[in-house]
Image 1 (tube, rainbow, N blue to C red):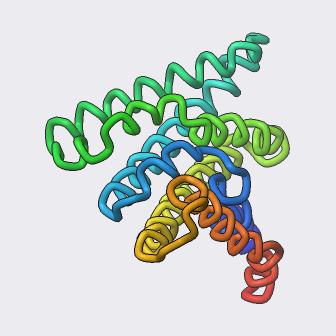
Image 2 (cartoon, one colour):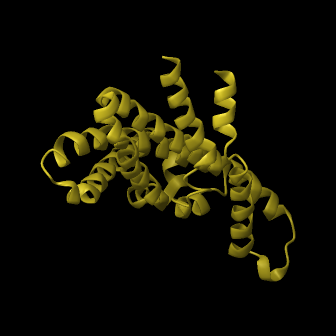
Image 3 (tube, rainbow, N blue to C red):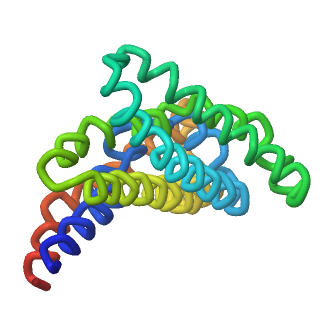
Length: 213
């Protein structure tokens, strides 16, 4: 039991810190740069991405195992996954427009762009690649749990990156960079420095969990 908990904890914290999809694997850069100017829109986008990632993985993982792989339709993976994500994003967009119009307006065009956010699609595909082998070795339930925790960790990592970078951007806007660095250049430099801070977590998570056990 403790070994299973350690496995799940390692996956969760690794996805948040060590393998952060935005700052380490550089997926989902478009909304990361576009929506991180204000804290409320950053949090709103991060929460929306978490919801889409978890539900998309919850739907696509069994689809891959029991439908695509079982019928030799693996070549349709990308198309099916994008369709699932598009439906989920549409439902979230309708919900926000109906109940939280302020957040809906703040996110603007970046909300429907979650459909083509490579971070969301990447989580769904990589969860299948990384944990589908455990279906045979340890059972579908365990592998399914790994995939869901991976998606949740990736979403939380996306939210964390958005919030941290929002603070960095606010500090940068208050500074006076050289003329050649104003605008997008200084934003990209700030993003690079922020990503370097996450790379310092390599190996830390595994060692902490091993020490606790």
